[in-house]
Length: 299
Image (cartoon, rainbow, N blue to C red; front, top):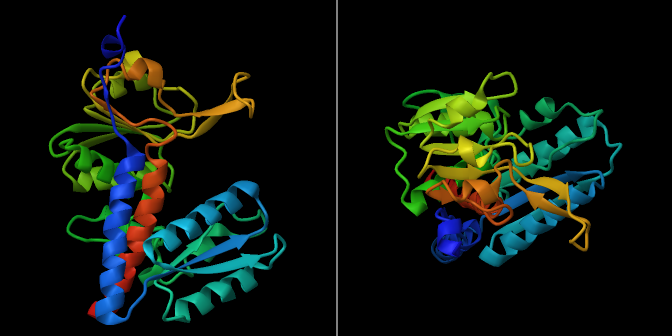
């Protein structure tokens, strides 16, 4: 069988789309700096020494440097008291050079995530997790100051690929506060008819088969099979799962929530893992930070 017959789906190259967005952002940052002497600033707060969190923070710092955004870095020990972490957040809220504050999750067990996140000024909540931002996202005719980065990246991938959302049936797999819930609200705002499939849904495959757009964010390796996909559907795979692979030097590889090999023979568009949604999340974080700086100028 030839490659064309093997894979019909058009690959949505998140890496290259994110690169385009980053160069657009770099131009905006230059303009803000030249015309208003304002350099957007992003503060990242890291608690403890989790390897994955350190990697993400390093990646965000590098991305900021690339587009000319000023980076502020706060590192706190694993055992830091919740009150001390909150007072650091308050310091950043008061710093006029900081336009975005991001507390790297997960936080250590002894710290209440909700308490910390709700202390971030809504004007600087570039993660879009503040209850007021999520509340406005859920309401018709209201717009949040910031939209969560991964969901925003998913919709940006669809729109830059030319996928129509209006009037289409969209199925979101997963209902987390970080992806599933906000992405379903964004799809509703974009006039899709939205269903959410989760761990308690019976016959999830029947619901997914009806979808013109599938956004998979369940965190289960290869859960969605090729025959669950409607022919020609657009598939955005947010999942990043590590599976054993003896052929790799590391002994494992990353796969999504969708069985890519099978689904790419049926879908119209599909994102790879890695290289699909991941790069977009960072690009949207930069976008939100620049928007925060612009809002200060417009005041």
